[in-house]
Image (cartoon, rainbow, N blue to C red; front, side):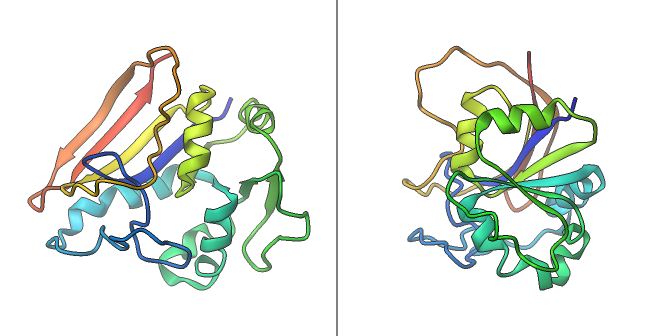
Length: 192
């Protein structure tokens, strides 16, 4: 069985919308991850740690369309280039595959994601994709949350956590750290 990990940048009030300022991001505070905070390299160590554990990537349609314009030629994302990518979308056509970005498979439903998790292989990391993370979290398919929480309140925007009326879900803190610029690293396992 494969673990599904959501990794993201989150404001203290739970917003994950438009953190980096890239294509397709529209929040009024676009790029909030890189603005107004002192750069502290160790606060970003989680990203390198994740790469060592990543066997595949998963995106929702919007994040796929946004990242596919930048990541294939980005030196910062070169290590992800040949990894398998799964795109969860019921609307993207099969020919929407981006050339020169490794193997890409379209999954059409939450059930397809559940079936993928039953197979062999390592951890699958979801980048961006707040709506997908919310849907998969509500379906009980996310196994771990890797969060960098920023000391900012954005007030509005997309959250990766749903507000659906559902049973309580307990998390177990695997790892945490705080950095001099106020960023917190929180790694939680979902208790089953």
